Length: 335
Image (cartoon, rainbow, N blue to C red; front, side, top):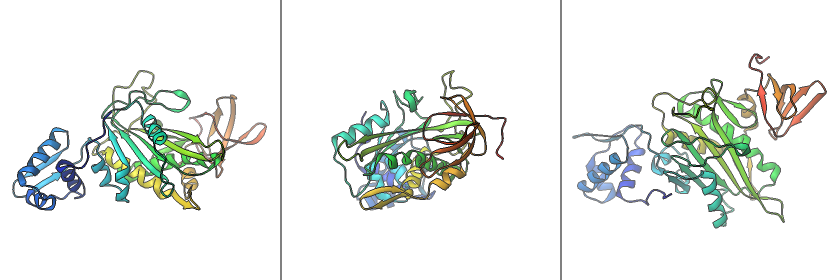
């Protein structure tokens, strides 16, 4: 479980290439800007190619970094609106789960209360990925986005719950911004595309017993990007973003961009803004008949409140669901 090495010539070459937006850079330019020989640049590019980066080299034209499927902090950083966030990212080839790594980091570090976003853990695969209610999350290498954001929001538990719904909005916005697709949210925080689940979100909090405030908040996000050999129980249920020119690095960056744009610092607390209307707009539940699984009631989903609660109308009247699971009557369309 080793993170990628610190900035050497190879990493600096990758960082420069990732910022070119489809443009080429000559070996001479790279050598001059890095203060190394052209032979060192050539060795760095060769090493990057060996690691799987898609770099096109043309004599008298220079190097061009093409879309690829290798995850790296430099590649993610090239798509970030706030470049300083790149230094908070750690990329691993494989972990038990990104949430586990983030929680371990939180336990070992005190955190900077001036900046609520402390660390972002990204992995190419997970050996023990987890979803809600203890379910496993299938996380094979090279096929998805598996990431966790560690925040120190300094808010109460009721406000912390909102981060889960905000994260589902961030995923939808990121998929749309990166690939032009329009996923929807199934309450509470599952993201669907073409009636199949493409994303799960697991949020875990550690609360200060004395104050009742959330000391640390870990938002785990798993997105199925490319097709893989799914277990039989997931076939026909789980979907992907399968398509052309999909870049996992860009998707990760766009998720970070969207979620951080919702953060607002007030009196030392990290609060969320401008997300609930987007959550409603992207809902695949509102206007549909549903079944509340724990009570077996049928209901109509009529609204979502400011805390992300689902307001439903049943035979006994109107009530708000704050947690639990529902199924959607697929024969019913929005009215």
